[in-house]
Image (cartoon, rainbow, N blue to C red; front, side):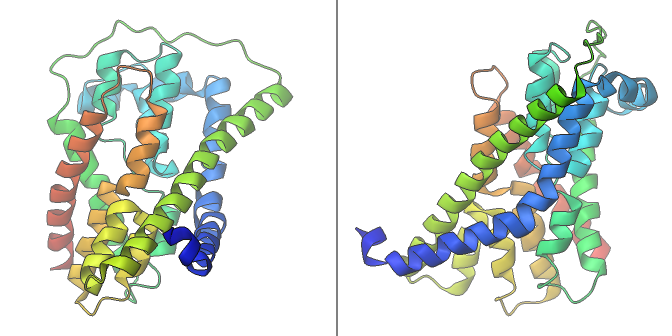
Length: 287
C-alpha cells in the first residue's frame, strides 16, 4: 500500500538508485570483474602464485590461488573477494578450509569507489586516504591473526586449456553482467527500503544515517554529509559502513556462496572484527 500511496517518492528513489549504480558502482566495478574473469580463464592465477606465493605463505600460511584472491580483491572492491573465492573453489584451486579462511579478510572496497563517494563529506583529501589505509591494514591484520597453523600444500594448480579469446570475452562479460544485475537489484531494493523507513519512522537524522549505512553502504556514506559532527566522527562512521558493507553486500555474498559449504558466518565475524580494528587505526592516523 505504501508503494502506491508514495508512488512519486518510490519513483524518485529508484531513479536515484539507478543513477548511483550507473555513475558510481558500474564504472568502478565492471572493468575489474571483466578483467579478473579473463585473467582466470588465461591462467593468470598460476602466474601470480609463482610471483607472490612466498609472501602469502609467510604472512597468511596459504598457497594455491590465495595470492590472486587477496591481490585482486584489494583493487576490485566487494563483493569481488567472495566472487573470486567461489570461482576458484569451483575450479578446485582452493579447498574448503582455505575458502572459509580467505572470506574473513578479503572484503575490500574499491579505492575509486571510496574516493568518489567520500568527496562530498571530507574537504581534507587526506581523510579518504586514511580510511583506505585503515581498511587495508585491518583486513591484513585479521588475515594474519586468524591464519592456519600449518600451510596446506596439497592443492596443485593446473593449467586450464586456453580458450578462444572471443569465447572467453563473451563468457567473462556474461559472468560480470550477471553479478552486476544482482548488485543493481539489491541496490534498488535497499535504497527503497531505507527511504520508506525514513518516511514512516520519524527518527532523528543520526539514526536515519545509521539505518542507511546498515542497509546500503553507498547511501549510508552519502547521508553522512548531512550530519553536523566533527570530521573524526564522520571518518569513523564512514569506515564502519565500509568495513561492515551493509546488508546489501551481505546478501550479495550469501548469494555468491550459495550451494557451497563456505561459511557466511566467517564473513560476518570478519566484518565485526574489521570495524573495531579499522576504527582504532583511523583514530590513530587522525589524531
